[in-house]
Image (cartoon, rainbow, N blue to C red; front, side, top):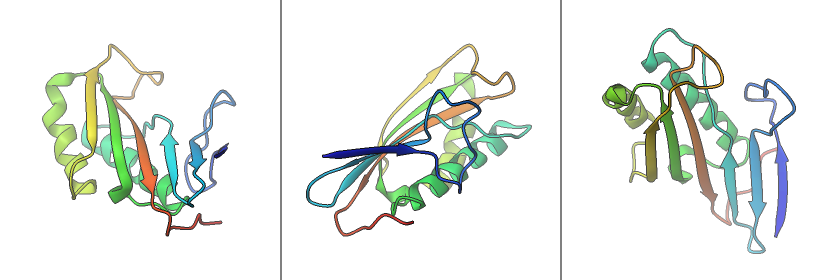
Length: 133
């Protein structure tokens, strides 16, 4: 097993050097697991932020030869759980197949004061998929 971490140029870079955007765990058969750090996005509304988050997640996955269809687990933090329906409507635009395992919970605030949502995912990259440069 080989583990590599980094922050592909295709996605917003971390605000500091305390974390990497993606950890890739390679298995001997060519398959891999991708662990993405929690993502937030700019936007005035929850829908705008959610859309930005999933666009970033999509870019990070594609940089590693995966797609949103490869997501197997998703963790979501909302600053207002009462708005889960708004979040879910946008999420369904991006995750159109069988839903991944999931947890959503409310937090009093996120590291960016204007952030309303943060999403972290794990994706399984099949052995046939090769990592993009």
